[in-house]
Image (cartoon, rainbow, N blue to C red):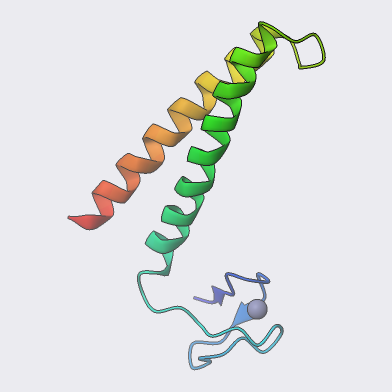
Length: 92
Ligand SMILES: [Zn+2]
């Protein structure tokens, strides 16, 4: 099975330690977990931003509608939670 580079998504041969395409070092085995952890951090930031936007939408007309913001916040909340669960599962 071929692995893919985390940075540029290029194919990596099993014996390659550095990506041939972009030159980034190949991550060790727990790369999947660190990728999830990185995404989880990003989702958390988006969730906070979305939450703030939801509050702002109640007061400012320039923001997207309250319902749109609220829906986005709720979706991000669920994504955030499942990402956390995934990380927990990998730890055990
Ligand atoms: Zn690469």
